[in-house]
Length: 198
Image (cartoon, rainbow, N blue to C red; front, side):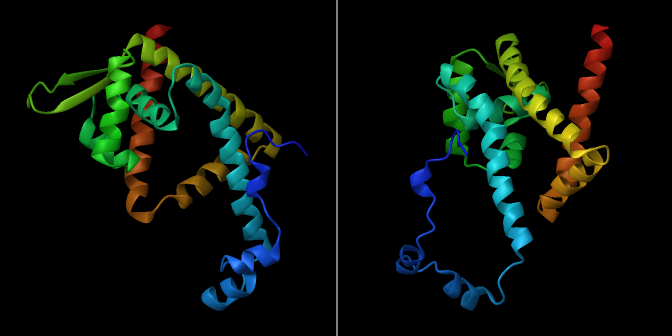
């Protein structure tokens, strides 16, 4: 089996090395109690590989601009939520102000994102994707939508609803309602935008 993005040197089945590092299965069982069901371990590993390929598709495009996944996430949410406040973006991404400032500086400096003062509060910073930024965001999204659509089709007719429930359930309880609201708002604005174009 060929792996596109995994450094195979990082994958080890050497039990003696695991024991030397204090991470043997026996040690984990003592620390955590009974071992987890093998099916759940499989799900965890599948999520690693699914995430690798889901993010890997846009990585090559991002690299052409000198961008990474942090730039992708910022651009995605700014594009999907025009006028997004910097404070709200920090809540969505759960990163430090310094990390966001570094990424935003590059996206703004390279003309992918524009920052404007709020109409009511001039200290408020609102973010908008520029035309250039929107084109890149849509190009990256198309790659990921294509992968998701193919996976849902292969998984069968019940997969879409079940996958959505599963992914929502993976989100922390405290954040779930906010995420659902954000996704609904973005979906509504996308539909409105499509209707306006047609």
